[in-house]
Length: 308
Image (cartoon, rainbow, N blue to C red; front, side):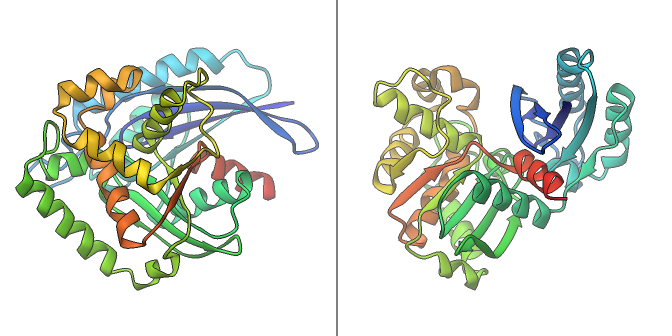
């Protein structure tokens, strides 16, 4: 039995998963952990250069030390690290990766945007039965879009804006102004119109990944009286109900959102920017149903490794 540790350096959170892999290739995740490290926070504010900020780096290194305690004594362990948008775009990427290696002794792979989108696709088609869909992974520093037909990826892209960077761009930490929301809408409309292939997903179910989307899923479980709030994989919700939740939160300031988000309160400052692209995508593609996925980039990388 092999223990595979995956370290995932996202733009908003740093995550770890431990998966046991049997000799026959079957596997089971036995542990996962997450720290909200906000690696992308403030990185676009240094004279137009994208620089990972010292506080964000220290938060991330502190998270790694916590994670290391969870896996360092496991037998037959191997560790793989992947990084996405924040590290991908950072001009001080090499310095950060060297600091990570000093803590973990791991050479982190920085995924390209297209690789990130493709791994999302692999995760979804290997864990959900959906045949045709659009996939949207809303991260902290980027969001990925994939159109899937007959379980094949027709086209995919990574757009280098996410919940944290969009919050900073459109001043959405507290209650977003009408002016900023209108600018946000124009920005999204422009981005979507640059992707003519996106219209191939018109009317298809929208599979949602990412922390902001999972927060909506957990709120739906709460509303339905469910106790297991982590059982969101495969959960379906009408686009109407998704937009109802989004509209409700849109009308609240940050403190009011914290009050209703419960354990997800630390996400209250970025959740409007995390959900706004999804809300406009639902309208743009006339989508009637969303499906939530707990599987994303890490799981896609794992499936890719096992296929090889």
